[in-house]
Length: 451
Ligand code: GLU
Image (cartoon, rainbow, N blue to C red):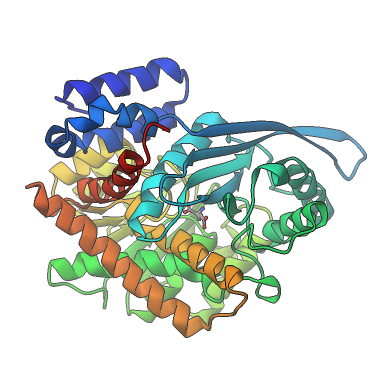
């Protein structure tokens, strides 16, 4: 990254030196801070208040042992994490990720991103993230329950409806949230909205399951609208096949676009007819529920579709690209393939799917990029609505939720576009989202003194 500002440069250097080996965390700090140059130049008081140094240091990092017994009677031990990153604008809020590659650097990158994402929603939620290096693939239901209960047996003392409200992320869906909620309630003897993404029978919000994917598509629609285009008839390359991909595919179908691909760790599916029917959408849920983490069976079920083992879908030509799998799924090689195919729009649904180098290359080659912290904020926005529903001891209807979600996504898009415009950067949603998300957190931190 080409950073001129000495203050920003020194903070980035310190982050790299003080957090050795946490490459994903370095990546997001570099990406966010480098786009804040015009803001920092305008606000010399931030340096005096060591605002950036405080922003990059989590308020609290909790790490713990998660022991559990597998179905063969063997004792297993995993690492548990909760990073309470920033509470300037509200209680810590953000998901829990269960995946074997989870380590502190991943949780810190996600917590840092979450701080700005949550700010962008316009709602009063701070940033946090947690998880474990537990691998849910192939685990029995009983093992998942025992793991979730053990995880919560430590986590419960650090969280609460007004303190820190976790939710799902990769590897954590409604089932895991249910087990963790049950254990929290049992340990604390309080019935409160301490987790979001709950089942509808016990405080969950109608529409939360599809919220992230729907929100991404609303955001993409606004991006296209800016250029006088619509989603109707557009071809879309989607990666992943989990909750976010499923919601994205469903909303794209409703708005008349054609989804050409989905993918998994085992390869990608190309469906020339589009992942376009209710049966196909439902099959994505079945694939996920199988617990095997593979997408290949889609091509057996729908024989017109083709499975490409071990490959990613980024070489497929399309009007719009929506990565929904995980971080850094688009590097230089994938970006070059996209540009060679004349890509015009990339809307990020997974957190930080594009490397900084690939991002710069895509934008330099005219690809319009909707950054994840803006585009995928619909999930956490609905989580905050779920918190409100629980605190008010009430229930919202799906229509109430969808209407709010759509308006929130329009506002995020417009605020990011406006912030970029204000600082003379044109229509740069990457910089605009960072600036708009940062500004509210910065205002709150400056008002609250050196804490
Ligand atoms: N894990 C989701 C995200 O990355 C949702 C977090 C939440 O709902 O708290 O934003």
